[in-house]
Length: 389
Image 1 (cartoon, one colour):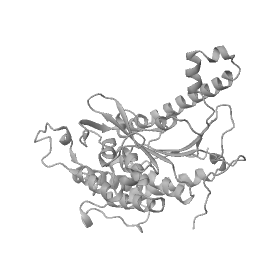
Image 2 (cartoon, helix red, strand yellow):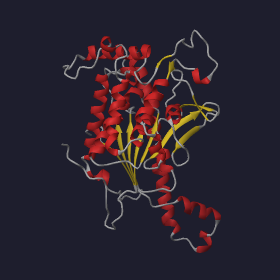
Image 3 (tube, rainbow, N blue to C red):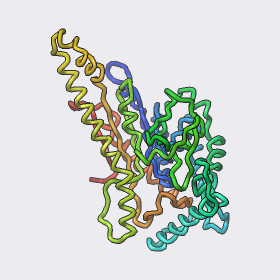
Image 4 (tube, rainbow, N blue to C red):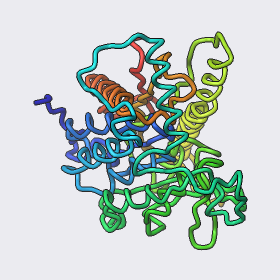
């Protein structure tokens, strides 16, 4: 039995230490089982999010969490990830052997590439399958079919594992991001403003040209990661602002080694492309929160005639004394994973990612300060225990 870490509960005044616990999940395809491992550690620690927000694979994990009662969430996450990592060729597709010994790194790299090729050629069980005939040889003009893969298996999987009535009950807030293909605008489908169904989850993960756009109410949407691969800013900038403890789970690392060959160049480019917006969003939110808190203190010393100015009234509404902790959990890929890491849907690699997420979250929760209100002038603390340093 894992030692239970209590959910942040009470302050001297008797209220909640944090008014909101948010789980923010980035996109990253097959890397998403890392997020499932993180959630398992949070659940064991009795930390259950009030709000889950995701992009792409993060939106699928978010739906599995928000769409199930707390005692069933890890089970449903496990069922999803075991489903999509079933070898498409059955026993001829290198089935997972939990008792296999450690393998040589070069062999591991070759196996990963072989399995990624299998996913590209044959799809992932319960997730996507090759479109027949291929749009390369049989051109399509329907936006819902303009993709190399058919994602109807994902619809069936979501309907089987996710209770959308529960999602729309408001028990746990859910937000997923997508991009309007026609306008290019980023859109958040949020249970505060929308009734969510399988289409909204699939829209958030409709990454072209592999997956076709998803139609919702006459508009077509692509994967939100095209514009922003993390919903962190959406969570922290939403009104009303509340004291928030956020677990931000990233699948791409902004830091890494200098590439030594063209394959590593492509891998490094992908990491930077999908991770840099997280850093930028964090810096922007910290700076804005600093300004809000500063103005709140200045406002208290203004004379009434100045407070009555429309501009000052507007700033007063935007200012607040809310506090935020961000616990940043970042997956650091192994060297043998390479550029195929986000579409390598093998059971062995899924288990490695899951275990890494679980260990990272347990490590972070071992630092009690992450669960305490920040007392600095900014009212904002960011924690990253992904490296020993």
